[in-house]
Image 1: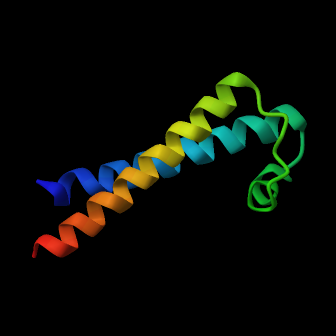
Image 2: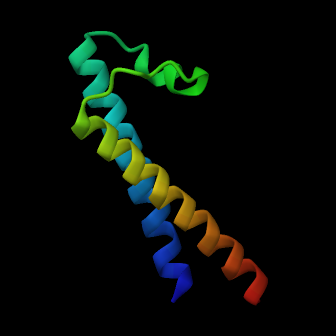
Length: 74
């Protein structure tokens, strides 16, 4: 069961993070959002972009925890 849920969380999290960064880049009219996230300079997210980003990070975290649990159960 965990082997099915884990990739869904990881894929869903990656899609949500990329969606938020794409929305930010379109609004700012440049592609700097994709590298600014790594240096911590994204301070002007809209509420929708921030929600997508945080939900994506949460899904990625849950997917990683499920992966660890799945590997330790075997």
